[in-house]
Image 1: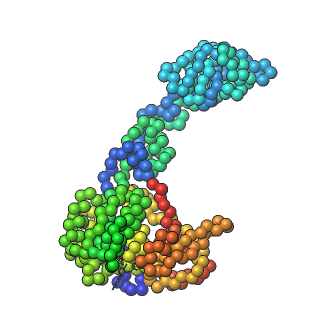
Image 2: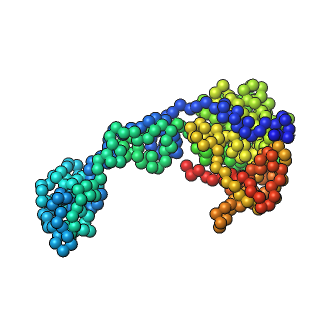
Image 3: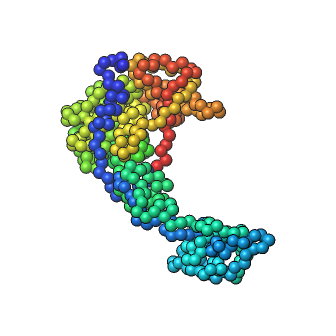
Length: 413
Ligand SMILES: Nc1nc2c(c(=O)[nH]1)N[C@H]1C(S)=C(S)[C@@H](COP(=O)(O)OP(=O)(O)OC[C@H]3O[C@@H](n4cnc5c(N)ncnc54)[C@H](O)[C@@H]3O)O[C@H]1N2
Ligand code: MOO
């Protein structure tokens, strides 16, 4: 229960956000561009895997029956009538009582039904001494034993990691239809902001939020770009947003959503009537805006304080990006960790603190806080590796008790 009835909970706001997302049309991509995405078609194979019967070993192709009586003391000696290398383009053949030297992956010659590895022979060139019997089918990789021609290879919804891309390549698919990365465009608002690389005069602040949010969106799987800074000017903001509408699947702004006289994001977008500004029972990240522009493009208006922007991104934007990607798991995994210090939290508010998560020798986790609760603390945010979540109903976490932690692991796209 929120202490203040006017505050919406994080979970309620997330539900509104997720319900407000459409879907993005699937696109066709080459294999490596599709890495990490979800397949949007059922893929069957036209060819069998393996494509032909081939040898699992370097050795000699034989007819198993010809080697029946072979022992180390009395090897069977057979003539070697040729070589088959991997890449042989036509199928060779051999008669009964003969062998061919064969390489791993090379097609089994017609007439042979097994392969004796080099190590079990004298490695002869004109003739070879075979020191044990070969079973029919031994060291033969059968055509289609991995996947027969016509069989389903991957279903719609499959996540395309390295193994799945390898399968698609193996069956000859160089392009696939996938759920695309949402195009996320990021705008920082605030007349105090300047671009990185310029020396700030007194009162100016270097824009870091657009880097924070763009990087976080990329890490979440989006195709994210920073548009840059827009000053606190009603029409400049609306122009900037409108000019990006056709290029965006999601817009994200930071700043200008609290109560200030110049908080023009809130003023300008509230007037459009399609973006709602609310206060959420969370800290940081209390003021939030969410809605649609041009009736289609979801827009998140995050608070300007850098830590508030990160926490709001994690709470609302990241799950939204994952939903647009078609992922089933929208939330980051959490772990339970022993709090190494006491933390207080206001009743009815979900508090997110920055922390450093440690893995204990015993296998469990412990967590210490870094920095204070202030949402302007960029340096301590950068030295943290997790968010410590203190739920709405908890007002005190005593040192030594368990607390929920969200590790902020990089996705390694
Ligand atoms: N009277 C009240 N004041 C404030 C309230 C409130 O409820 N009543 N809420 C506070 C909370 S909580 C937050 S969070 C902030 C949200 O403010 P805005 O979204 O309007 O953000 P700004 O005022 O534009 O900026 C806040 C702060 O962050 C710095 N900032 C902004 N953008 C960037 C950027 N791109 N890169 C780096 N730093 C940025 C900005 O300079 C300010 O210091 O409102 C509180 N106030
Ligand atoms: O919500 Mo503000 O984000 O507490 O700093």
